[in-house]
Length: 175
Image 1 (tube, rainbow, N blue to C red):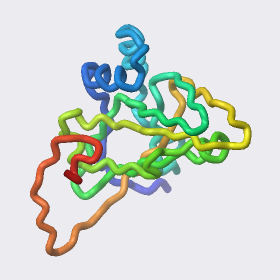
Image 2 (cartoon, helix red, strand yellow):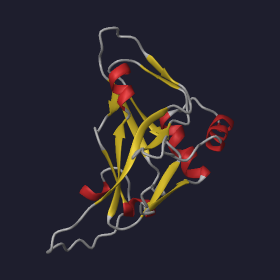
Image 3 (cartoon, one colour):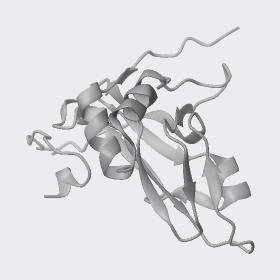
């Protein structure tokens, strides 16, 4: 018998303008046609199996990382998340075990109010390739799952008094 799970989120694409702006920062050598084609090919995150907790998030671009390098990947997606939940981004185990690649911040935290941020809640993933014995670079093809997202509930303290509204993206709540 399949358990009934709550439906607490929805993935969507960001606008083509937001995607183009972010893509040109990470991939300045791309032309507008390549960015538009990548946008059209973006697949919304999905679980691989009915028992999977994580939604695979894929890169819309092909890129190569050398040991010691990192890259910010504009995924082209955002998530509407119900209040009381957040999206935890984690590396895919195969990237770390096989290719010494991880999320630069180890775990990403996408809050429910990020959806309304100035950047449309665009989920960006920063990957870092650690040094390994081979020193060989690794190419990630467009469509490769680079991390996974799991929706997690959270609570607040009895005396919580947070009233600020989010406007920015990375690091905006610490300002």
